Length: 167
Image 1 (spheres, rainbow, N blue to C red):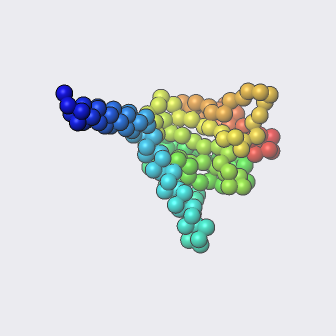
Image 2 (cartoon, helix red, strand yellow):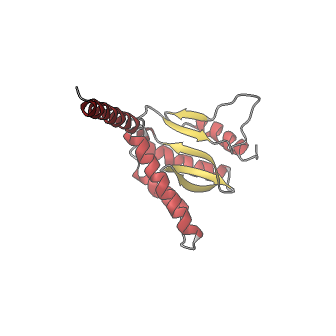
Image 3 (cartoon, rainbow, N blue to C red):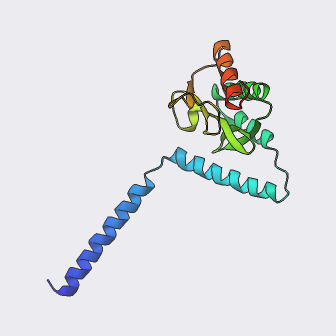
């Protein structure tokens, strides 16, 4: 084998390795995760437009997103929306990664993730690091929701109030 054939063969192997590495990195995120990232990018663009003066009604966007959800996520999302707004009026509704979220002073405190978002068996009520839920060195930041009964609603009211410093 000549020197140029050997160099050509090595280059071919190298390019196929980098192509397969690129394919693997593309497979690192699910289609649902890619969709969530695209939605977040759109949310950031809308926020920039809002800062430039165009009025964005965040609550309408949240309600529209909830209305798009399939049942039972839609009903749960709407009940959580009403519950969160009543429990902590200081929280402002907004979209976050394409899901309803509630922010204080511009920082997301809590969010609802529908089960269908990532094809999971339960929905999630999650809290960010802005939530004041600290209990020692370890505490829960997300809760699985299969349904909302009066018992769960009372627990959520308590968590929301604590998260914003009212409980």
